[in-house]
Image 1 (tube, helix red, strand yellow):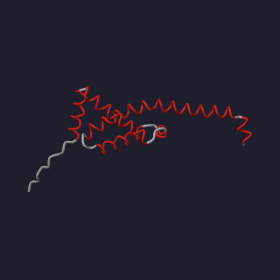
Image 2 (image 1 turned 135 degrees about the vertical axis):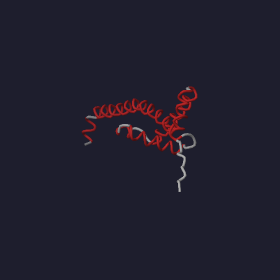
Image 3 (image 1 turned 180 degrees about the vertical axis):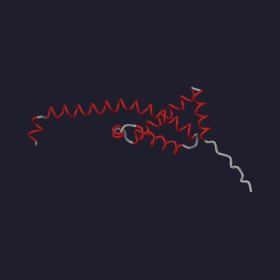
Image 4 (image 1 turned 120 degrees about the vertical axis):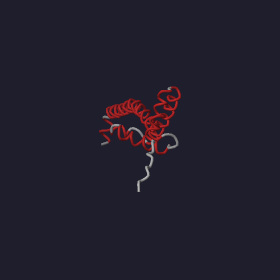
Length: 125
């Protein structure tokens, strides 16, 4: 075994470098894809759940993300990295909503529609 390693160390090094480069490229390319998806999911969660429900929105976004990303990408991102990307998406959403009044109105209107509580109608006796 040691003879094999010493004889083919350069070939082994090339293969390891190739695999490492492939992983970095896939991760870098998919990172942009995941960030765009998170921006949409964070905005959707804000519209659906409204303000004051941070933990619920976070749980919804992570669930939706893991349902939507390809299985292979789940191995490339740790929970800590996903947390950081979600925080970045939240900041991006806040900035976007402050600059875009129609998007802000849409989120507020959608939230109001989703949170309509039916009025209890008294029973006739």
